[in-house]
Length: 364
Image (cartoon, rainbow, N blue to C red; front, side, top):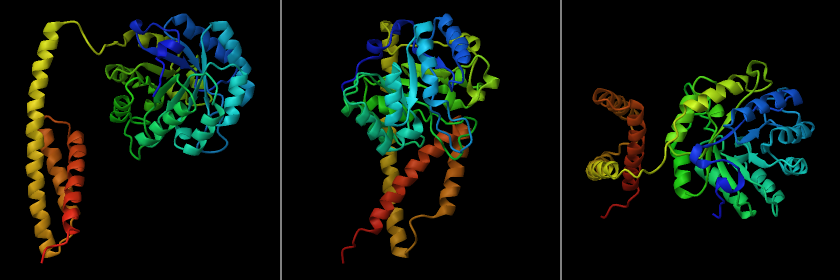
């Protein structure tokens, strides 16, 4: 992909820290935008302001934004603060209205990213338009959908392109509203190394309590920026009040975050790191060889099941295996959830191997 770096389309000093985008979940009034936006500008740590104008909601009769009526307020906010403004769009009509209002940056929301038809309609409406576009990951954890939406934008001629990681909706997400599943944005970065990825901890957390922790994790993973919801009076916000920070609390939090870099000039550190990585390479080879030996045993089990006409999948064995592997992991100080995830993959491969054997014609 032909992608321009963030510094080419946003005025911020990469050496001073990540790009920070902040502002209320929804544009509610001109006063609300000015009070919040001017406070964020005063902090000196925010490079772009955000505010929702069109708010997709799961159920009707919820606050769904003020629509085009709020766009002139955002134009005024830009003039007062001097900061660029970004807005979510979910249809070609939204794009047309936002462009008419001279919105600086557009983003495509998670619900829209899930629908390739809508994404393509938006991409078609942006052909020939030189404007930055940020694409949030889809609600469900499918990298292909996220990647596809980015590719549609790129094919429409958008080169000022970024991804926003806002977490994924799971049946049981635990304490987080949308667990981050970091492996997915990491894989996206591997596939498109030049693509900026901005973390949205507000939607990942769903509450204020863990926002700082998620921000730090994102920076530790080398993400390029943060999009954080901020409201001058969050408890009175018309949408997502629990996940918005006041500008003062946001400013304090940003000062506590530790920015890290991918490389260092310390040769002694590099040498030590290389030694440790060599040890990991050796251990990984042992692990792969052990997995190969395990699959050889799995094949023998599969042969035995075929001869006795026993089903490949045996749920009582799977439940017992998972329980015991979690116990062993806990005993040795390994995260039991990691062990469960690992053995889920191992078991899936074991089932594939045995199913393949079951469908292989025997030689008479």
